[in-house]
Length: 104
Image 1 (tube, rainbow, N blue to C red):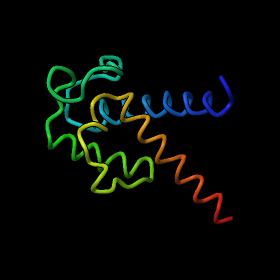
Image 2 (cartoon, one colour; image 1 turned 30 degrees about the vertical axis):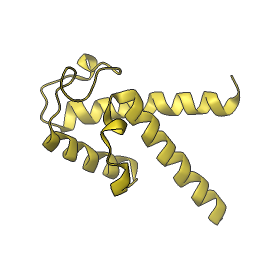
Image 3 (cartoon, helix red, strand yellow; image 1 turned 180 degrees about the vertical axis):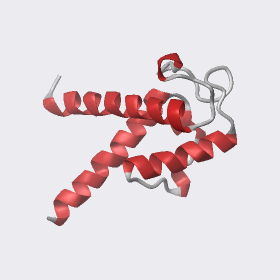
C-alpha cells in the first residue's frame, strides 16, 4: 500500500471514530460509542437514525470538521453507514486541504 492510500485509510479511521463520538455524545440516540457498528446502516435496520437526527448530524459534522455539504451531496448514499460517511468527510477534508495548499 502506498503512502497516499495509507494516509487515506488512517484519515477514514479517524473520521469514523470522530463520527461515533458525535453520534454517541451529541445526538439523542441512546447509543454508546462502543455500540455503534461502523458497517451498520444509519437508518432502519441499523442505528435507526431518523431524518431529524440526520439533519442534526449534518450540522454537527459541518461544525466539527469545518466543511459544508452542498445540496447535491445530501444524498442517502453518503449516509448508508459510518464507513461511507467517513470516506466522504475525509474526501471533503482532503479537497479543502488541497485548495488551501494551492492558495499558498
